[in-house]
Length: 539
Image (cartoon, rainbow, N blue to C red; front, side, top):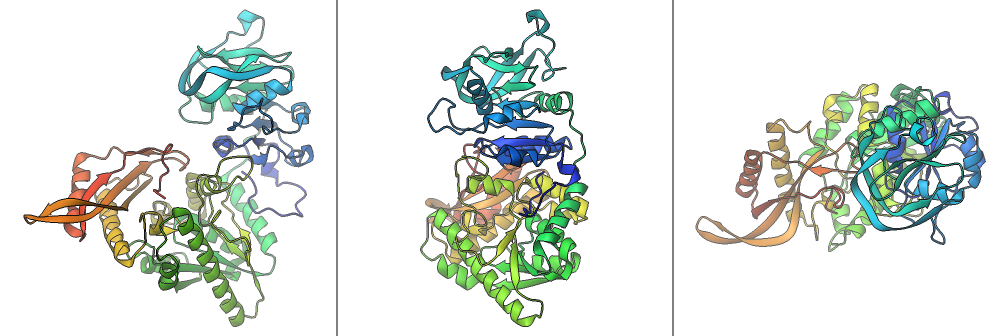
């Protein structure tokens, strides 16, 4: 897990970060998922751009390298590349998908556009190495001879580089190769995704059989090393934190508080886009249960004024991001005038990796899906430096860190809530009247999910208000009311998600209550879209 508060003066990595695995990012959407699978084995992993220098890679003293997938074709002009010397560093290398294609071409093999592309499930046949004059593949040691795998590529290896032999194939293509002398391994499928059977075992083989990595990374090590990094970066100055009361920002705040104590002031902003009763209840919990210093700011009027007439979701996010920074800057100035401890230089955010990968191309040439208010929505000229101690983590990893820090269960089990709040769940123009409608409908959804004993079992459950009216009948009269969509998904990390097959009686109670209790709503629909192709939030 990368030491997420970067310091230019850093020379030597902490002990738990040395001897891990460096993942070179060629722009794949699942690059960080590879790193996360490595961390699950208690082996440190760092994600670096594919353009990183050998010197930067060597800083981690890696026991192995993994080259990620990516959206490009290795034979295209301008396709991403990395220093060819990574293949001669003397450490094992695993190329996944695009990484396989890049290694193949770089070492003298041939890659071509596939006559039949492979997307989704396929059957991998593991080659019998002894039958072909080779020893057993260390990568596939203990793996069944046929395995269900997950593909996502339109190119194939048609000629292997000198010294390589095939270790697996589908009915359509070579799917795995290796050069055991140089310890270079390649697979065309994605072992990091859960759709690949035995994927974890394949990665474990690479880590422990091939790389001889040591399982010495842990949540406790992350807390200790990140806390020390925050302490060094903040120096003797004061820091403010954008605190929302959700899991991410609360864990970030507790980490920073552990590092610098009362030099941290948390700011909780009521944007007017929060859920029902959330502002008051969250303030009380943060102050009384966690003992944090929290300033509550009611900025409802200014946020809603800036959002008047705005319907484009990207503009909504950027407006909200800019307005947040304005509020934080004003509060920082007020704190500085009231204190004798000097200037506030840093802003803490609970940014997670899914926010980052969907908003900007971070490590490699990945596609921007949407701007998150705390990443792509930030203004170009920031009055603060940023401290984002969770930036390379997934939600479930943050929850584990929170448990290590002793946070109460009601915080750790809280469903994710987007930074822009109800603005991205109210499609079209934002009005106070529609916000009231959405809050009431959302409260019904959450109450019924809790009543059914499902709240802790699903990832997210919420309501979306659509700019769609439809005819209804109430009290023998014609109505023309609003439509509410209900969204309930299950996920491990928010990178992928599936819609939950709610029991019919739960859906019926939700629909009946919303139509009866929320004025102006005459129709309720259930969202059965998965991610991908849809995102979890509607905007």
